[in-house]
Each structure stands twice: as C-alpha cells, then as structure tokens.
Image (cartoon, rainbow, N blue to C red; front, side, top):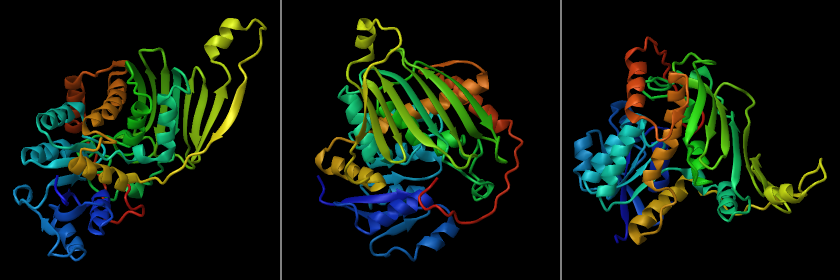
Length: 388
C-alpha cells in the first residue's frame, strides 16, 4: 500500500479535464495528479498554464508517458476506440486503470482488455459514476432485498439527451463510425445500459432493436432508438432514447411481483402491493379487482458523489483493497447491449446474447469502409462542462 497514489490522466478533453482538475485540487484523498498525456499540441498549449510544472508533467508522447515512472495509475479519457488499447498498455507497464465510459466500441476489443486485466493483479475500474447516485443505490438495494419481488418488466425512456447540430459539428470525431463507433447508444447511454444490468443483475437473452441513423441531425450514426429485450426468467424490457427531442423525458420503471418502482424527476416512488400479485391471483375469485397497493414516496438520502466518488473508490481499492463500485470487467455488459441493438438493426432481426462478436466487428467495419459521409466541423467550445 502506497501512502499517495500518483495518477496520470490520458486525454484532456471535456471529461479528462474534469478529472485532472479535481485531482489537481486535492479533492481525492490519498491521490495526486502527477502527469498528463495529451497528443494534441494545440491542446497542450491551452492547458500547460493550468498546472504547476513541479507537480504535473505533460507528455505528448505515449511511450514517454508510460515509461516515465511518474504514475501508479491512469484515468483514460480519450475517444472511445482507444480505451482498450491504452488500458492494455497501462497493465503491461504495471499501472492500475480507471476507464471512462464506454469501455470501448465493440466487445471483441473490450474482451481483450478484460483478459489482460485478469492476468494482472492490478485494480481495474470503470467510470460508471451513476452507480454513485443515491436514487439508483436505493433502487438497487430494494431490488436486491427482494422488496419488488421477481422482476417482470423494465421500461426506460430517456430522451433528455438533446443535442443540436452545432454539438456534433464541434469535433471531427463526433457522430462518425470511424471516430466514435456510434451515436446516442455509445456516447450518451452507456450509464443507463450499465444500470439496467447493475440494478437487477439480469442480462437479456435476446434483443430486437430499431435504430434510426441521422434521423434528426446531419450525422451518420444512430440518434433515435427503440429496443425490446427478453430475459431468461420471462421478464421483458423496453428502452427508448434519442438526442433529437425537446423537452425530453427520463423515466425508469421497474415492475415486479410485489409492485412497481418509478424514478423520475429525482424522486423514487414505490407502489407497494400488500401481497404479491401471484398470491392475490391464486386466491381471488371476484372477477374484476386487483391487489391493494400503497403509494410510497421513498426517502433517498446522501450526496451524489458522481465521478469523484468512483475515483475515490478506485484509489481506496488500490491502497486498502476496498471492493470496487464499478469493476472494470463489467464494462463489457452495457456495451454488449449497445452492440446488440445496432446489430439487430443492421441484420433486421433478433440478436441472441452473448452476441456474435466477429459478426458485429464485420458489420461495424462495413459502416466505416462504406461511409460516404462528409463531416462538417466547426471548432468551438461546448457549453456543458463534463459532457460527452
């Protein structure tokens, strides 16, 4: 156990800058920012005045960064495709790794990252900061303690991701198959796709999805998705998302044998059945009728520690072997759902899980090689700090 964990941030875009700032400001106990890897020369000129040369060394060369012996761990916050390869390089240099979402673009490359992590004894975590949200922590607690009974249905409509054309035009890698590997599923929704698994410990057995590509914006990737999933226990799920509607909705609904839970407008509401639906149905003979239910506004306490909470947990896992809130090897699960939704659209049919990783990689490569899309780029800063 080291007294101070020296952390290097790889990639100083929106999220990388946010991570570097709170580390540099000392907001993570037991850790400090000691190095930055940023390959863009113009970006280095923008950031070099922010950090003390005595404390933070800025690198533009990847090999020099990893061979510097200035860091014990890295936070990877680069464009999506490079996450697995950078993580693998870090593991081979004996460094602990915290990866920004998504874990990667396609599961084949993420599986290779997971295998490299497993061969090491190093700490590997994902920046799934929504796992620190008290609302979802409370919901998970209720599901895991069986207050909801067996899960029957999951509905999540999350359409409050509104993005203008200027957002997509702000960078040449955004919303392209070659630069980003997808749209709303790979960029905005990794947290929700992760939570669908984490809240329930359930992974679908098959998925049928309908993705619309460039429906609302001049982009080549998906910006509107409706997906239907089936689980081995008979439960189903519907997932709806887009970046082209305003005002949007964020409503998560879980229905079980013991009632219904809804999270919307930062409030958790539990319609609790006094007896299970199964028991009621077996005994009831009155025709019309339903189990008695109580509407409970569930108190949710605590602060949302968000990104800093995940990073603090990462550091404590390194120093004190604290269990990880978001183990890195779980990053592949939400990505599998994303890949399956795209693959279902491309093949116009059901996709069984685990997916055919070779087929997905082939279809993704076809999108890249056959693309005729011409990206219009307007260099500008984004209004929302910390957003992807």
